[in-house]
Image 1 (cartoon, one colour):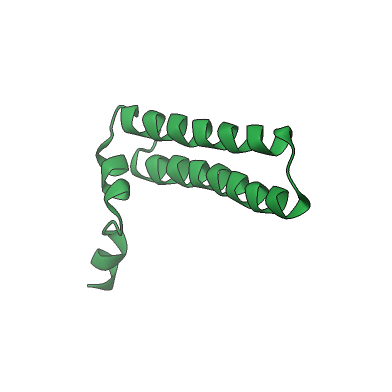
Image 2 (cartoon, rainbow, N blue to C red):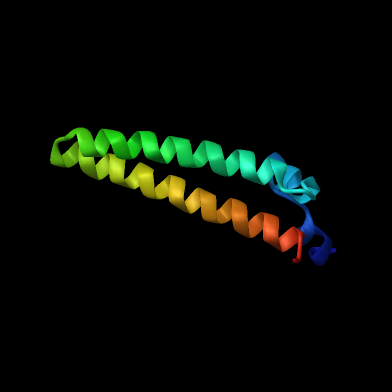
Length: 80
């Protein structure tokens, strides 16, 4: 029973990535995350107070981490 629960997706996005055999969903998510990260980076590069920069940097790294999670979840369901 525990093993069955461990294999169930926790989030809808996880199920969508599992069902995404050709990688289109993965690629679309990665593009959205990349676009958001670039927008945050532009704000950082445009100048910000130290407090704003720290907050933006945290958000930027969050988008980078989210991209890694998307890749990891997709690859775990689609062994290449």
